[in-house]
Length: 344
Image 1 (cartoon, one colour):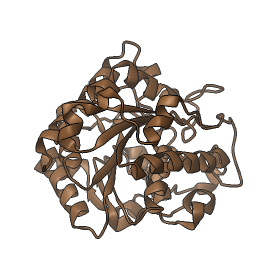
Image 2 (image 1 turned 90 degrees about the vertical axis):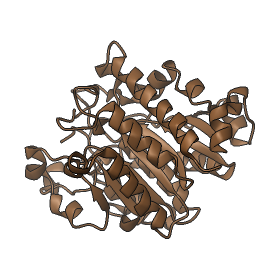
Image 3 (image 1 turned 45 degrees about the horizontal axis):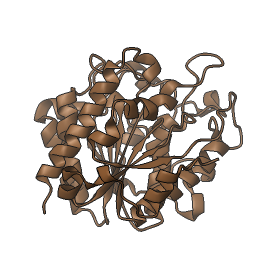
């Protein structure tokens, strides 16, 4: 089980929101996809516990690290700038029950406004987190615009409530419960922004990659996830049928749903710890990079995919940058493959 689970605008980011395309946005990739990819940084670590006393979670460096690996240029994307989070607060919040609860509510609304602006301009947002709590922003933006779904790629379910919530009073982590929050489970301060609860219906979610460890059974009510209306493809399904089959089934579920499109959530801990150790809870039974690339390409090739975000990779745990470089390559390869497979 994972440990924790003022808006800054630059001229280029503002221009992107207003419809300006830089030269890289004219790449073959974007022409073939018939959509302009806009890279937006959301370097929030508000949804995680400190890894040690007085130290903020290192996922705040994800966006910078992936940009240093050239993700924007390699994806043929325009730069949409960044949305900076409020300061991280050490200590509980008993009003919402969640660490950094008030800051999370504020940040989710601001992130939703930026993502919504990109969507309204016809862009395909590629949001670089951040922990999994950044999911609230895009799903809030989409809910304000209609009925949308979610492809949730994660080594954890991010949904099951704690068996002993009193033991976590004021210290629940939105990163570890983000899927529960966006489907309406939790305090209204986080789940009912603008009166839009739930941001996504459970039956409009497809989850790929969850695996269980002994501490999960001891800490969380796993039956809540297992009996939910979420379409589920756990690691056992992937091992039996293959990652491609899981991706195709999830895409079919979302394309058959009465929704206008779907967002893609990627938590780097869906990857096996042998290839992605730089996360707060390395996965003992996760995907390979080849499997992840294939899953992403299948989902991205859907004409109903409207955006993607990536989270949880922690560059502080990757001193030589190897894992971050591989993650960047998986993302850009998936986008390139999807462009070749997408219908004209």
